Image 1 (cartoon, rainbow over the protein chains, first blue to last red):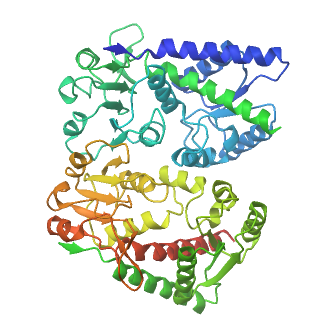
Image 2 (image 1 turned 60 degrees about the vertical axis):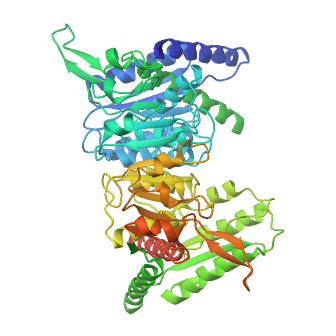
Length: 293
Length: 293
């Protein structure tokens, strides 16, 4: 059994990006610039966004954090997005989700210039991904592909079972694993809340990608020997610790890891990859803007 | 065993569309207008496009056929597309594929205004489909959904196996069958040329959608009792007839139909549905343009 070490790989990626940025600086070029909009004061969202901004600084990117009050109207947010779309200094930007109730999330995502949509949530980018065109792949699925690639996990002709059909992880992951190329070329089954006999399906899987959000859902008796397990679950489970909670994945790691050939831990697996891939998308955005201008 | 009669259902749909168009005329409204561009003289393409134009006439739509020589340059075609994008009288248009070698098909599809892309091939529309947003669904997958709906085939929690991952049928079909709603909510497995043990997978399927293009690929011993079979294959097989060929599906109809609960014939199954759904998309385009103006 080998651990798919997202912490280690994400640090490698950040070092590679830092080296790229240093080359840009040496050549006297503009460095990538990521902006993030956050509306309101949600604690978890502020933590995520803060960590994205700090990661930008660490690799040498410019970053801009736009904070807007929780009373922001949809029109005010759309105007701000338009401003960032027009700002040629900004290569990519994200709008941290969730948004307050008065704002239509779909309208907001549609307003982002697809060429600056480094989260890859705009339908144009999602469609390009599904049609095998070059685009921004959403950070979490992109991070999973990167982990599989760096550990040279064979995916061709394997049966990949994806658990959960969210727009952010399950649906894109099911598309990406079935695309031509590597990682890809898997036979892919997408399962969800209406799936019957989930155990029958998971026990046939060579690769399982679980993005359900139910702690300890995937148990050893549900998988076959040598399975590859990617655990995307991050659920806060209350406990007696100082923090008051711990983070739990979807997988009963202790027992499943005994049967697995490769497995991601939680934390330290898929999680750290997500920010690294957001940085990578921002670097890509910069390179594309440069080649166009 | 019940036949999913695409010929009958497509005629029903055309009658329903005709009734809608008659109401539009009675109200003194503009009727839907579909344009089709064809480049070159390919016999099969001319037949398809001709049949689309005739179907428009039959339901009372306006139609425009734009014929361009096989020597047309990419720029000339892009200019024509821009003209149709700007023409407010045209509600939707298609560019008949395949295109001559000197033209980049992807660039052409990207140039079509997504609001007029009644083929549903533009990445923005494809992405909207994958993200459960309202859009134009490509005609063949849309036709399959319509057949399942009209025959009240239960899809929720069923295991749907899609054979083939083309952008036009297999990939969108795999997404649509796993979406929320009905038809949908299936557990979906997408198989393709790299899939191992295809028989093991098909024999677990409640619903099989085959879009492979290999005559008689799916045999009775590959399916379980009461399976629902949708045959999207249309391969021209040379024979001694006057035409010189006959059309064959992917399914060994004679034997598979004995085990199936529902099955589409070839011809007369999915084929006739495709044009009907193109008309339906054009009607939708007209209604959306009206509600915006």
